[in-house]
Length: 139
Picture 1: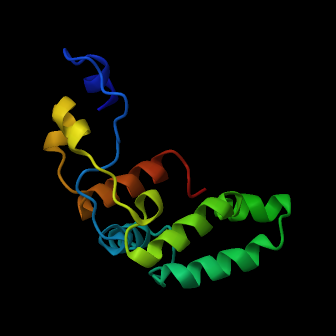
Picture 2 (picture 1 turned 60 degrees about the vertical axis):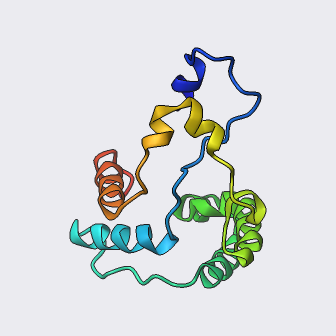
């Protein structure tokens, strides 16, 4: 999409929201990720999926111990402020831009890639897990 904008014949717009124009529910991706991690035997049990608020509470408890080992074991601790912001905006049901969905019309106009982009799917999530495993993320 960035290349589409950069090489567009028209003058580039002042701003382009390069976010997925067809967002999907969090669970539509997390369930397939959990399944793929289990099927690849990365975990011995199927990961339980808990509400975001419960996960954040557990993360905040873990963040009280900011030892180097804990930061390596739970990298999300480094993003705790950002994650808190997401949690606050999640009240409205849409995590983008503090609860307001991004307008993607300009991006879709100048980028055929963005215009034709399909919603993310379970197959995409499985491919992510395969990539993460290939690059050693689960080592």
